[in-house]
Image (cartoon, rainbow, N blue to C red; front, side, top):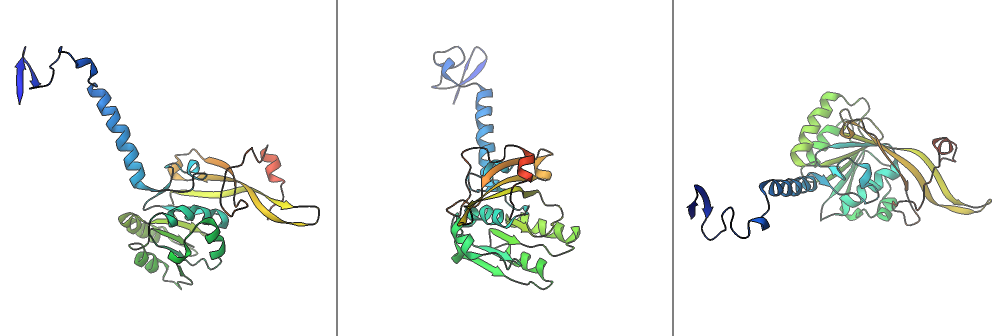
Length: 250
């Protein structure tokens, strides 16, 4: 119900303009701002799949975009990117045409290998396999076939968007991929003077691609650390780019 006072409409039982309590009410602009921030946060959460906290700052959306393809140029980084998405919820993931993908390393990173399917040697049926698995698998780790065409990629991209499936493409080029992550510098630690074993790898990771809007992102990480996970270093690993280029690489 409404009441008319001095030509203005007011809800019955609510203070009209000029009445006691008006100052306590938020303005329309404040309500719009609050709603907008909440809406954006909710939409971002719904549009992405979370990753490890150490990796999130590298990604423009703070996570892996649903229905999108991210190229990954390093096997260790591939495993760590997959760990949280594969372990979040009772979902299944699949590895396509990456026979060197190690279950032991995946388990150490936190990937539930009991919900991880392997498809090896798709033998020219790569696109058909992706189309068949996308509706049932949240995450696909794939090696794109040599010479993958833009036409094939565009058809698969449309299918992935329709199902919200995340794809991490390793060991090949996926035309039109939204992002690419590469390890640009690396340094292994753990060996003593002729003895010991490698315990951790210190790296610099760079994120490029269309989704970055021309603003590449980079981070220094320990990948893997002594526990087989990814973590942030306590201090800067590579003091200069020149130093990073001269470290021992494996």
